Image 1 (cartoon, one colour):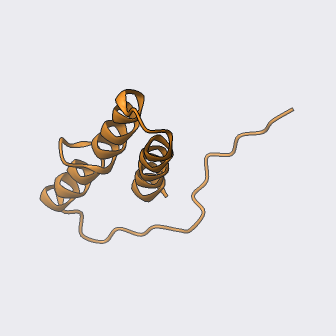
Image 2 (tube, helix red, strand yellow):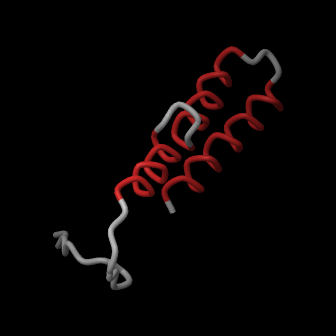
Length: 71
């Protein structure tokens, strides 16, 4: 039904790997101040919001943070 091909969309050629720079980039995605943490905070705050229009706003911001972090 589905076929998974482990192939990058664009070719990546790394000439000089830099572990320190890679660590900084990874921390932006999954660190305490990263995109994933921010999106989960917005999405969890929506459940305690008493106003429906603001619940929608927090949902929109949380999903936007998820899309910016991974795409």
